[in-house]
Image (spheres, rainbow over the protein chains, first blue to last red):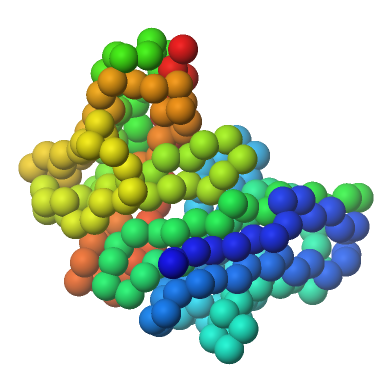
Length: 109
Length: 115
């Protein structure tokens, strides 16, 4: 079955602390993986995708095929990072996203 | 560019009624996808359309249907509404198959409440 699991519904960290949002996936082939973010009162928007291997707003995510994980990390959290984060998988050859249930990140002052 | 636009923003319907939701993609995008997001869950894929043809369908009953028009806008129809259809319906547009850019841009959604 194709599935994305985000085990934490809520993650609270203090400003300046490291952040790791967990994402595990279940897929037999080579998926394309994404992190989407939704800030308060804004629409869902792409944060980063694994094929780009880039850092956006200080966030990085590495695809670990052995552990079937795509965790999102940031070394020093900022208050403006507070948002809802969704991990998503797009099976090869399709144009759909399979989303996880999301993790709400709260960065405390 | 206004981005992906959806209408209406909010809607209240009675059980058994039918509803039509509308989506206008970003200019240049030829693919539109629909997602249902129930409170506390991530978006769940319903349909994808590209060049007016259905390219993918999620695990939703036949009460759900959609179409895409020559200008690439799209409508999602839901018949015989159930209380469980209450959700945020999201539309996403992208360039579509054949493009190296697979990023999907989401609209603000239509909040459907079935009473």
